[in-house]
Image 1 (cartoon, rainbow, N blue to C red):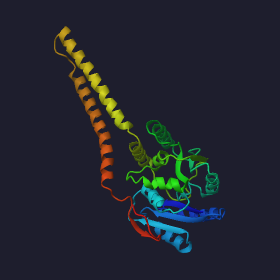
Image 2 (image 1 turned 45 degrees about the horizontal axis):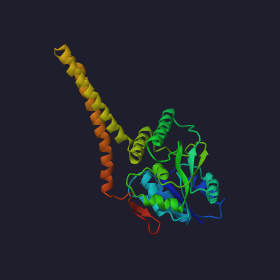
Image 3 (image 1 turned 30 degrees about the vertical axis):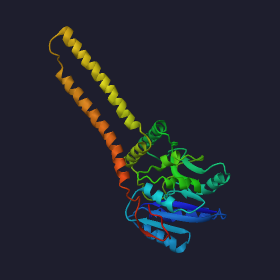
Image 4 (image 1 turned 120 degrees about the vertical axis):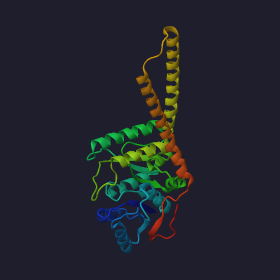
Length: 314
């Protein structure tokens, strides 16, 4: 049996040596599996690529694919899924927040034949800023309510999958990707493995509050029509309210006569409705922008260097 390990990397020169050492130690405990370690260099600006080349020179199991620029983690994971050849495929980060020590347990669970994938989730968010944790929990609650995807609170991208599930992920070749939603949308039976939050072994996180916020908006737009529905229902409600207001003004003028006072409030109402209209147009524009980017059919990534034969480029 061949186990493929996909490791997206972006400026991870400090984390790669301890990660690689720990991964080798863990792989020695599962000698019944051949391993393929597929590092995806997502346009790193540091010494990440040179370190990966050193790994490949010393270890025939190591394959690396280096992008021409930074395309994002979603593109890096997709490149890994497209090029992994194992019977089982795992995706994990290089910063050790996805502990390689969990791999033997994950393999034992999936070998039982009851599950198609073993996904990990953080049991706690210890060490994470409170504001970030609160918004993360809120995002998962919203996603579960407004979409048909099974997105679990605290879910990580770290998971082990059967070949059939990986093939299903690769078949979803959309340009705007949100893997947590894709994992849930395609189905398959998943076992959730909880573990305590682990700090980065080295280096700095590439995710700040605003980048995570933008990522959450991408997830909502990619897997839910709720924002469009909210805009539609809001328009209907405002239209109904305006009709009532018009009738009120009309009958007031008939029965009480005189000009209707209150131009400041009228201006406020006009500004409010105008703001709502612009907000709704922004929601529609976001969906149109997604359609536009999909219709251009640009590649998800561009490979600059690799030691892998027959690289799949999509």
